[in-house]
Image (tube, rainbow, N blue to C red; front, side):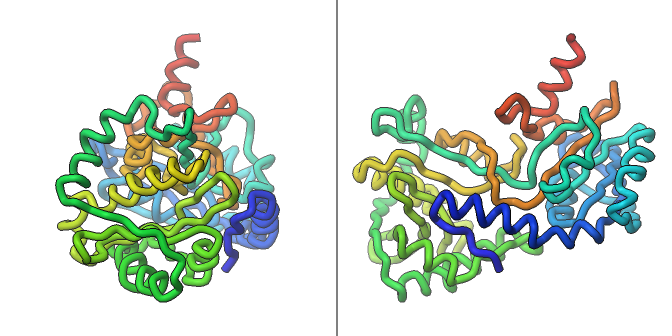
Length: 330
């Protein structure tokens, strides 16, 4: 397992090395034809996917409500160009997931995005909440005060072990099921040694936590966990208390940037929207080793969930639907 370094330079260098190490996966690409109904409109949708299947499961779960047909064919890398050219003649959406070192294989005019993006909150005049302060205090802050949550900062290894095995792993495994990617204890503890573990208490009961790394004026959220009575504590705002007290601690300690880690680049993604509510903005992340390239035929009506897909366009993320609408008006 390749561990994400906390140092920014090492992070970038390791991400590049990761692309080289995983290049062999691109020799075993697959074409997958998916046919089913979309999540939002429940309308018929056919999608061709070509790639190493790194995030195929997530794409299927995210775009489709039901899948009626799934056909898989091998695609040798040397024939990828011809396969793309052939499928482009079909009036349907194509998504190619490929190692970022091989992006030149993709024809011009395709829409570029990534399996994951990061969401960053930057302090303005030592204030993280900015124009959202009143809203955050009236929603998350009110609930935290109602249940009288408190927090503690620690680096204790036994506390990190308890967090990892009793709060983090069970919680993410329950939430993401077969799409779960659990970080190793070594990675979490390595991050906490440069940063801290934030513990949230309901009276004297530890109910949630957030493992964080730190590099100078930047704090990075590494993993969040919750007491196993998940729905009860989610409704009582125990997870939101982690962010609330993280920002409070950061402001008191002159932190300038908080990295809330990754989400899927789509406005319909609940994780993305939740972080956006805390003023987090989307930024490109060098760590994922693949790119996602999307082909949409001219004048093809695409599902709402695909319209909400964030695309890297003009050095920023904008929605696919917005780009298509702008192009149609030109």
